[in-house]
Length: 538
Image (cartoon, rainbow, N blue to C red; front, top):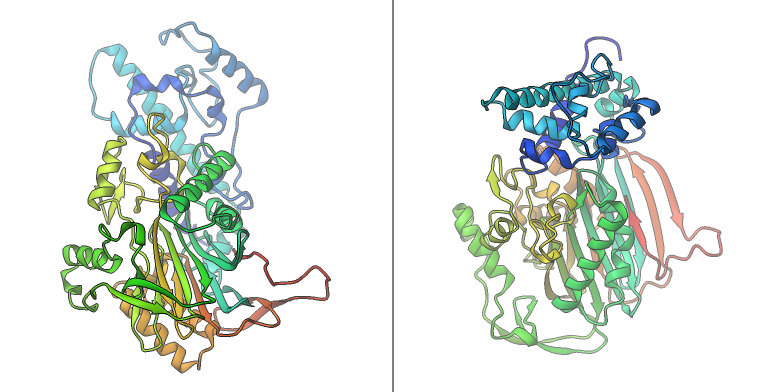
């Protein structure tokens, strides 16, 4: 690109520094000896830049790397006063004296920030100087990498159609599902959607989900591909069984993608079962009271309203009073909806009369039970723009995020960040509309649950029930209201009759509404049936 350098490069630099410096707990100099010398050539991981970005990463030559690694493995204590044979090398990574301390550039960088004002004996100050020099070398390396990034990549980031949408419509079973995702104001789309998957042990159940990734798309995409495998084999969706399945999925993600620096993802998942016969249940509104926990049951809506009253008193009275428990005969042809939530994506049931039922509650680090667990695990909750785990992560439960799950003395459900879900069951009528959305929809000021419900209802009326158009309008509205995130939406309409000829239509639609590409299933291929297939979008 001709002309002055774009400030985008400096934004990328700041994000890299913030991520690398603050993701891990502060380090002190004596702890630096545990890093492998092999890290000296890989201080920027693959997840910092996409492999297609064109960024050139300088590295040691093979001979240099082998020689330095051999030195690092030498158990003999290194004499810092002895001149290094590599002191005059210009590797672009670390001063040789820093390499002989056997620690990674990122640990040096963190120590630079955390020990900037220390004083002490001359030997101690010399060590601090070494760390500072190493840190500054690393900053220069980051600047070099940004200078060497390709102009094509910069142009792609600056001039991408940020309203371009990937859209899929699936007519199958007793539902029509429209799912869509768009880049928004982020450089890459880290969201992934499980549009529909059958439960292998229960053919009358469909699983659908929105996964909102952060620090990369690997975990959200893995969830979209594999969540149904773990949840679909359950004979019933009790908390204990769903918790076990989610922790199993999380462990698999960290094992296959990690173990360190694994990207994270929220997950709002629904398992939908059609009732072939009436059932009698105790309910609070649309929420079903679990029979095994009737005495201790607290309605989800009550918990949400109590939290809103404490944090957002201006919302008091915006939502109807929580009704009392009553016995209800749920008719045949209705649907049981089990909502499984990890993180801060949301699920809403919109009634035909315009009412709504909230199916999930956000997991935030400052909530008392969350903050207590985080602190017991050795973490902290720090508030900058919003409360964050260790000053970094703005949610307290997620898949992946392995760097927040590294305490070897604690089980998975007691780590700073956990993949333990909230599990609630509701009933839906065939006239209802189910909405799943990432937090990018709700991020703009004023776009709370009721506002998004009102917008969805208005667009349903305006478009005469065209779910693709409704999804696009909700996403565009969030973008126009200054959402800074990727934006993903799923709308599910229920039917009284089973779909006779299942279909799936994939589209890429420009920000101006022009269909750029379209693929339909089934195609002419014999094995292209949509019925009972797992369909995802990312």
